[in-house]
Length: 214
Ligand code: BG6
Ligand code: MG
Image 1 (cartoon, helix red, strand yellow):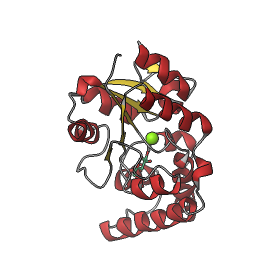
Image 2: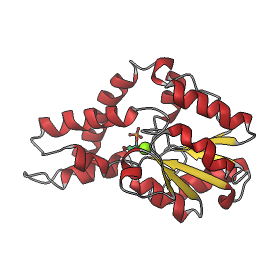
Image 3: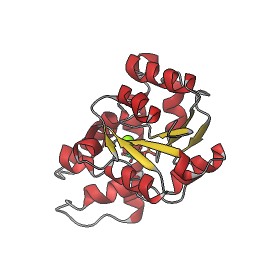
């Protein structure tokens, strides 16, 4: 087999929480009369909460915000986001993702999460995947978010594997860059696949099985 482990991004790969990030930021941006659309939103994929806010504020037509105001805006966004997460359940894990994950595990692969999100434990528990992964590296144990490779290098370290034996799965261009910077091959879905950012650019999550078979 071509890899020993797969490190999955969470938002926009395992589940569609990327849409909730968009809705929550959109609400904040609309309240501030700051233009914000799905094209700008694609730049927020993979980057931290505070960096996401900075990208949105590039279009702020008004006076600059203080650091305290920025902290408060990010906290407001997270409350809106967590409200949306609270509606999630195991039904928000698609059959395709669930079956593919189980199939990959049955093939002997180790499976990990590599996400910039501090809400990773909450999301995994809502979709019924708490305790499923062999390692979880997330926004709570990193100091640099994607495109920095830290989150993926930490996941490989937790698995006790060399980076070149791990495949990253990403929907973010910044995440694909992070995977490559970590010395890993990258399979992309969604926006990153459309941008051609991966070594493989998938149209379906289940295609991962044939990639690891080589
Ligand atoms: C990433 C998302 O997974 O997590 C980003 O792609 C998000 O859009 C980042 O900003 C941080 O998420 P959170 O949940 O810690 O605000
Ligand atoms: Mg993502």
